[in-house]
Length: 454
Picture 1: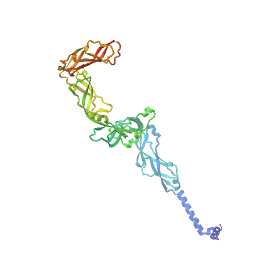
Picture 2: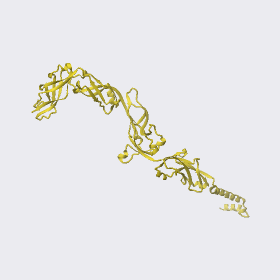
Picture 3: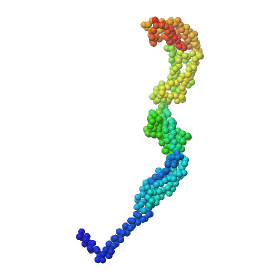
Picture 4: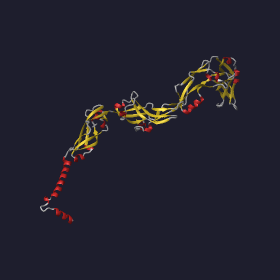
């Protein structure tokens, strides 16, 4: 401390502080700096800075009277995110205090009274009145899209998967894709929703497939010409529900997750098979190959599950079941047979029935009286049962040469007693008639025989 006092004493002029040039120079420098700082911070209004990401505000209160909402800012491009940059001019101190929250950029929308795109003037203001604000960009207006909000339900069209192929010469075909999402409820700008003619699940796979495959798709909106709507418009569509989950559960599901937008691409197999009629009620030993017939078509093209179709392909034939020989006569020679397939198989050409026409030229029908001695009761051992009918009339069909030689000894009538209750009395039982003459004739019609149980 003593050294400091000695130093001060050494520089103190005999005439006082005002006569010390060095000290006066130091004090002058400090005063100049202080003045400069003061002028810069508080007096000079030429300082400038940019405040970024100031939101554009639009008063939507008046729009409610017209049923409108602001959909989006469409231009200029620098404004489409709804924010802009503002220049702030003023003293360094004042502009340092200004933030984006203190600046208001208001789009004047008093002229908006119906749906459409409007060019609105921008008005800037700042709560700090000691600064001036202006748009950094040269644009003074903003384009805004206003529209009514509309809700609508759509059933989805058949899904589409592109780029799918199957191995050559495999017989495989690509079946109709099916999607998990069957319907959607959407909300969005009315002008966009009204353009939607159909909704569809779509996917691109670009693969060769040998088995049924599932792929994730995307929900697409198409116009009346089947063209995809502009993504810049469909981005404003909101999916409220799908598959009527809200109707079932009482709470809308919102948009389906990508894993719910699945499309199943079935890989099936096709083959062409020869149609071969299959007969029932055929007498034992009767050769059905002696019957001549024509079919409305000789072959059928089927497609279906690969494993099922491979079995068909190995057999090479499609069995046409249902021709009852006991109904085939010269006067009843046409049969319309309905085609039956398993759930895994369908006809490629959509056939549902086949017409079978028999050539009955050279055939005749006759009636023979068959006595009770030609009626046989089977499975009746241990029971006292007899034939109560004296005879029955049997209609037979065959080639004329065969029918002309038939007599009752060629006819056997069988009554199966297996299911009888064996209660006493006389009753009728169904009977089967067999023709044994060279197995070239058959009985037609249905028959009953009276039997007596004691």
